[in-house]
Image (cartoon, rainbow, N blue to C red; front, side, top):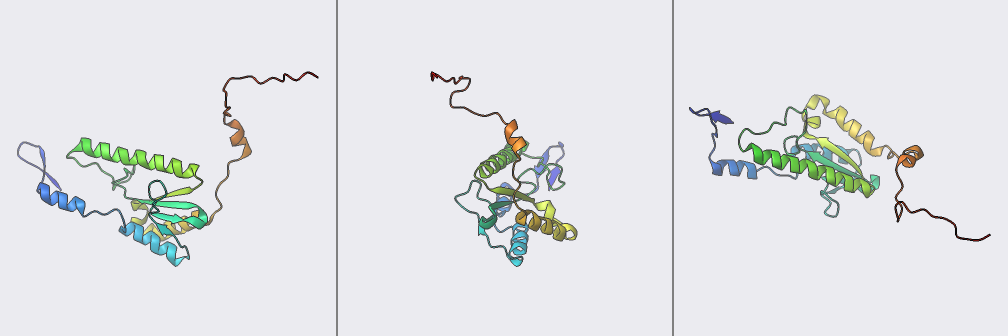
Length: 178
């Protein structure tokens, strides 16, 4: 928690070393939300790999059979908009804005690359499974979204996309004499 001193500037009640120790203790693997999702999936017959090193972003859970990658994001670290668990710290604001915006950009980039590789990407937010009252319903929806067949693009959508030629703007004519 932050406190205001007599000059109304915000100061941390922990020393720099204590704050460093606290922040260093926050791990990115085997978090409580991740363990909840993993236990649910395993109990429902899914077998998966953890933090696959060959995939961009090292997804938390990889279900190869379903070509699905699951990222379990902390609301603070990934800047979950509209979530009451995401609030920028009042100290060192520029650092945190830069860090979280970089995390968000990296998430978008990794998702795009994985989708181009043919993987389905699912993001689970910490707040989605934090409340025990709604957790089971959320996990059931997660199960359904994994086993559902992947959505395919319709032909109408593909026809609307501009085609790319090797030589843009070149007209091809037949030089054959008949």
